[in-house]
Image (tube, rainbow, N blue to C red; front, side, top):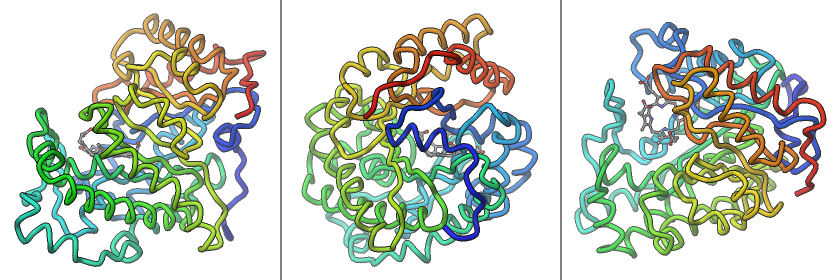
Length: 371
Ligand SMILES: Cc1c2[nH]c(c1CCC(=O)O)Cc1[nH]c(c(CCC(=O)O)c1C)Cc1[nH]c(c(CCC(=O)O)c1C)Cc1[nH]c(c(C)c1CCC(=O)O)C2
């Protein structure tokens, strides 16, 4: 990509490609966010989605953890949200203080006009989400090659959940009604979302994203059989169609990461789903995951984010366990939490987490398995 500084720390990209590396790279999901005092300062009174839409603010927020933990983390992730796709599809999404995302008009039933309208509408992902690409390009310039930049999107199943539930949910009454009462209409919509995800990720790469992650945050709501029917095919659609789309755009391929939270039951399938990296949440035992993956993919994860509420002894113990579980870092491993950093975490505890990963993976603990 013309005009960007040469990447000085390519450890994470080499790891994601399955190469031998000197130590496992580290970053954490939601590393830019509410636990950081500088996040609140830069966000000010701006609405959450207004921050996403401002390339200046979004790039500033993206860089905050990189500056704060300079030299300790090996990747940035663009500040945005998975719900920008439903917005691009014409749905209104608000971020309510302390409550999370809210759709004032969620999809009701495939038998009403709203579904037809949504399915018929042609979505111009290039135009609708131009602000994300601008934020990515600006962030790449500001990063000056310090670390690579992740782009991301929500997975079709998780986005469907939000679009019909209208926000977070406990019982998932609406989305379960959709998939079990109207499976074919649900699948048509999932397919449409998957196609938008491909184009959206391709344009993020064009703008400067160097690795991409697909978040299937509600995978735990599905049974193994329903995951195979309503989530996996659409995750596969993305991993199958993104590389040729990049080729068409004359862009180099980038590593793809899938993070299906709670889908420990589907790890074997995920390892064969066309992604080079599989993210793990903390319900998964690392050693067991390494055994199942059997060198097919690089693994990313998976400390319980809750340990950051604990003291240093607790963090050290979790890191030691983690490093041991991932065979001392000898397998392809990207160190991370098992989900995003949560509010009220002391930023110094996260720093200590990073330092401990470094300490226990220094020296001869080198990932040595070629994937
Ligand atoms: C499910 C999901 C969403 N958004 C996202 C997911 C997938 C990851 C996951 O499973 O957590 C993805 C996301 N959201 C955000 C990022 C930024 C990049 C990063 O990881 O640092 C990423 C990668 C910023 C954010 N997205 C959100 C915030 C907090 C906004 C604020 O109150 O200031 C941030 C920094 C808001 C958000 N956005 C979403 C929810 C449920 C919430 C409310 C919960 C919460 O506040 O933690 C939807």
